[in-house]
Image (cartoon, rainbow, N blue to C red):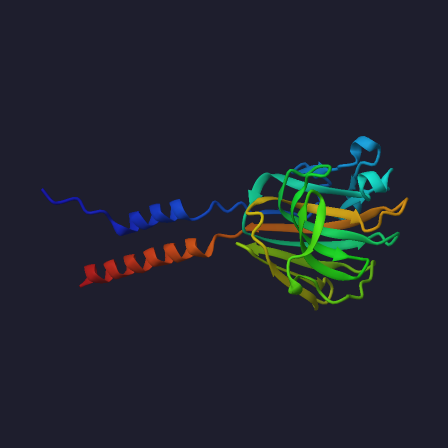
Length: 257
């Protein structure tokens, strides 16, 4: 009776299945006119200032009416999160098609978010501050931005045109974050940012807008489009799988001899 010998190819397949993360990619161009995959983040809903969600021109508009009491409740803000999947490492790309110029505001995406709600949202934000015209990555705790996650996590002031469309990206691998903005029409890189922070390991992804002033009557609104989210494996996972592949290659060479 011959001794049982495990085929390394089978071992490698099992190893890959165990070590490779289940990639949960997502994309949406919003031409369906539905945000059924999202849960609305509308912390001022109970105070008569809930977010308004619509689909102008095939995009996804999020509008935050003025806060009824900015000093007590904070400024206007609203968002929308993918709640069916949490992401640790990710690549996000999206477009901003237009935005309100009524007052200064933030508009962008959030990553690794937990407990979104009035005074409870934690995670990371990457987007544009129309107060300064800067692209930035910040950590958010209890709905409060704690500022850029490093000196390179905020860009120089940009000259933005509300009628123009912009393409943005936001990536996270471990504690390293990167972001960029391009002119959607020309593809010209306008700014890139990067920083490190290890506070939050995983969470939800979504869009958000917020007034950047506590003044009475301040609102926020932006239209997003072409969201694409890719879950990214840890570098160690790929190294382990590659090492297994080299082992199989060596075993096959020995067999051929």
